[in-house]
Amino acid sequence: MTVTLSVRDLRLSLTRPGRTFRRSLPTNILQGVSLEVSSGTSLGLVGRSGSGKSTLLRALLALEEPDSGSVTLQGRPVRPGSLRSLRWFRRMVQYVPQDPASSLDPRMTVGQLLREPLVCLGIDGQHSTMIREALGRVALSGSTSGKRPFELSGGQNQRVAIARALVVTPSLLLADEPVSGLDLPLRNQVLEVLQLLVNEQGLGMLFVSHDLDAVAAICAETAVLANGRIVEHGHTAQILDHPRHEATRALNVARQARGVTAQ
Ligand SMILES: Nc1ncnc2c1ncn2[C@@H]1O[C@H](COP(=O)(O)OP(=O)(O)OP(=O)(O)O)[C@@H](O)[C@H]1O
Image 1 (cartoon, rainbow, N blue to C red):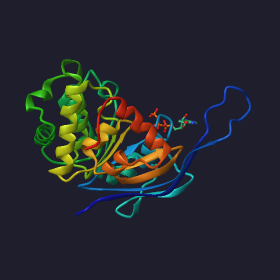
Image 2: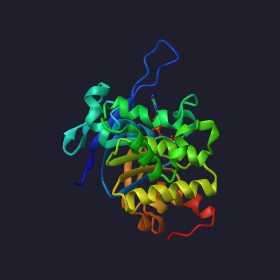
Image 3: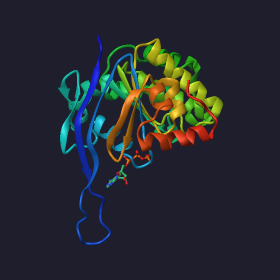
Image 4: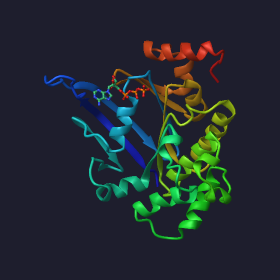
């Protein structure tokens, strides 16, 4: 079954807490965003710092209430609410954070870290088997279960963070800059794992990044976000080779400065 997360004309404003007694006015952060991510496909979402990527992710994860527009999964509305009311959604859509160092509790073993979402989401079954399988999907051995994050490399910890998302067997992953803190060999290892998950294991992925090279490695399609709007959306190769919007060209300049040509 194909699982689809749809965003339609999403508008969201935020009010920064003011430093004075005067009330701050809300700022429009997302200004009519529409996109779709389905299982078995990967969509890159790129944009400069401040373009609204994290805010959009928070809205997709039902952590922010939009002013208008909709987020639906399989046609069912996704709205902020209690963990209980969102269980159905969290089982199907999981999040991979940018920085495993801050998302993985250093006091817990990898096994405990992976068991936690199974317990929180009330998933029955043989948890040890599920944990071993999830670690296998990111090319980590079962013995990793007994280790704590500080005993692992940055790349291994990022794979643990991905396994933690996978252990509940979701259909879609929302990944926020999942390789940005890694050096080149570790970055390539993690990108390879993500590529396999989409191409061979049928997962859907929204891959958020400001790094067009990382997006090109994973995503067939890319959307460019600028000032809270999708300003360009199409095949990744087309966007890399023939950027139409100034924001895309600016991202491409940084990429070309590294001497990389589009595939
Ligand atoms: N709580 C808030 N109140 C008001 N404005 C906010 C708030 N959080 C973020 N913003 C503003 O919203 C805009 C989008 O921020 P957001 O973090 O979503 O961008 P981003 O593309 O994820 O940036 P980065 O790549 O640096 O993480 C920015 O101008 C930011 O200053």
